[in-house]
Amino acid sequence: MPNRDKTTEESDQRKPSTFSLPCARRLYKYLGEYDALVELTELASRSFIHNASESGDIGAYVTQHARQHNVMVHVSNFSQFGTHLARSYIVTVASAAERFLQEYRREHVELFGCEWTGDAQEATRLDVTLKNVAESEENAIKCVGADLVDRFHYYRLVRNWTCHEKAESKLDVLLQLHRNVAPLSGDNADLRS
Figure 1 (tube, one colour):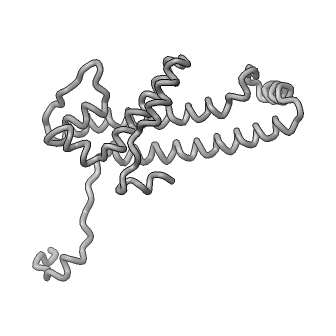
Figure 2 (cartoon, rainbow, N blue to C red):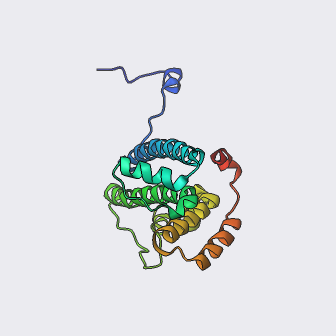
Figure 3 (cartoon, rainbow, N blue to C red):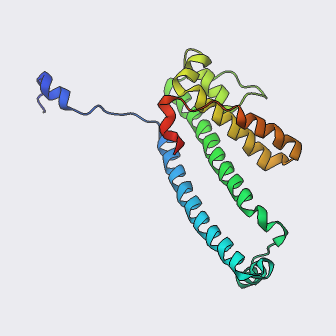
């Protein structure tokens, strides 16, 4: 049996243990996989766009490679390819965040044995989470950072627009919201890069 009477100096040298819910570990795993997929997609798309541009006839280049790989492609919107790809990245990350919040809720309820409140049709998963993990939603926002909460809500709206609406009139609203997103705080400044 180990000696439990350690001196203060010995106990100070121990590393503190960290606890994380399985959903957090899965989130890091998903995001790592998504990062790798995005990086490979960017590499392939940039190479393809470069080669298509260099070919002299983008339409013919795309058609040739579509036939070669047995893929049906409509070339009329090739100039918007990068924009659509960027939107798909936002959708992917937003979906991972929504999945995390859903799993976090389930694990939090299992761990603490209390049901969450605040579900409403207009409430987002993040809103409900913030209302249930601290003494108040305001305290939770203070802990997370209003700048990050603001960004989460903005990108959720972009995701919804990308997946469901795509109306040009709504795009103007999103651009205005983007201009009003809170700047990153000092604590989150390293997230800029």
